[in-house]
Image (cartoon, rainbow, N blue to C red; front, side, top):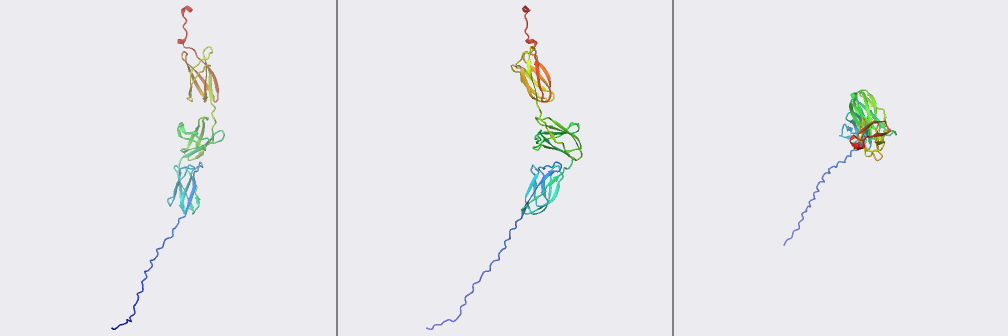
Length: 300
């Protein structure tokens, strides 16, 4: 039996390596740096803030509206150069350039002028020199036609806008205070600050007295009605056991007092009352004819 030995060489295959895929680059995030724009929008004539004014940028779509004091804030504004425009009803728009820096607040204040017509404004104080709120202010022109009416704010401030040139009368009224008037003359498109008005407290007066018969005896439970000729004040009272009555807190005026009681003739009395005056009067009442005692013939 024959045996053979192979002398052939066996080749081992070289393993193939897979290529490494290329890495997709990840973009570095870009952070936009922001800033803030702050400022005020004020009336050129009065020097007070304008509420509800609009502020917009020429690019980026940024905007804001002023608060009650005329201030505004625009946040998260990208750094850069902008043109800002402020506008409000009845005013001419105003624009200005502003540069916004990252992490900073840039200020842009505006002063607006009225589009047309004149303006009258002013302040009202009390006797202590403090601002007087809630004063009713009316402005009348030619023919005594009331054009506008308003009330003073907590600074005692009031204003009237869009007025034609001419003469006007301002009337100031508040309960507990004397009514005051002020005449002014306004030029075309003028912004006129009227003289500061100081309101004086009104001193009240009173009418009091007694209701008596023709003999001077007091009459109780007499119904009394008081009417003011100009003030249109109406009051009611009744006499007490001493015949006493009183009408208090009365303004300067001419008053008519009517007195009535069953079995007595109605009577009236007119009283002129100055400011702070106290008038004492006596009202004499006579019995009506139907209440007089009829004397029998035997007694005559």
